[in-house]
Image 1 (cartoon, one colour):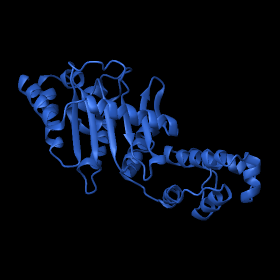
Image 2 (tube, rainbow, N blue to C red):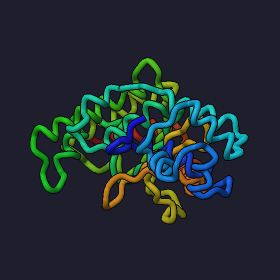
Image 3 (cartoon, rainbow, N blue to C red):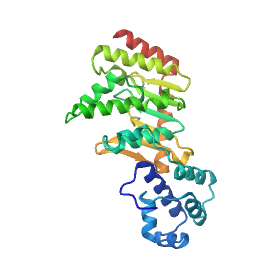
Image 4 (cartoon, rainbow, N blue to C red):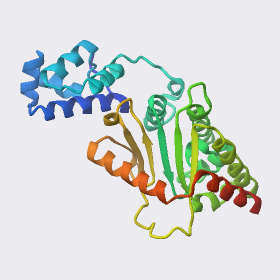
Length: 283
């Protein structure tokens, strides 16, 4: 397979998993190359996601690395053989690659968790709310770029409203619900949209109220996407230098624990709906 000029997040994740398997086997790149009949440069390219891997080669690598986790091997084989070109491809070259990578991650997710403190989670946003948020960007976006970002965000909702909805749970702070984005009418419409979506069986919305005590040390806003096996879960966080995709097993464990702590401290779904309904009436 020819060398890629640039790997997307899904290809990089496959490469990272191959590197983890090699390191777990205690093999150097040179030793691994000898085992699978290639050179160390090719091993480096595969682990960077820049060189494609066939299913046969993947299973050969797993065998030579003495990996016995058959569920993980099968899950990686599914990544290798997947040829999906999803709706997000229409935005390639028009939006930053991180937007497309997130869409692809969501498409393949088996479940999705969100924690947000200052904004309504993207999957729950109305078009007016999203446009108001993107309009605040500094430097200001050209109108065409603004339209593309809003359109992309609206299409991402397919994982909640499409034919194959993904189990979704979001923990959203009262601050995010009270901050007016786009004006009073837009904020009320946004709250009503959250209530509408929360009625679906696969959607759970929990509110983190201001009155919650001993909460100051749990402030990890995140997107958590479940993989086909737990080792392929991914956390997405926005940082000062862009979007970061986290896949280290130890870090995933930390974020799972943080999510469960916030979940346990949040209002139950029914009380959360009542809470949001009261906020909407205030507007």
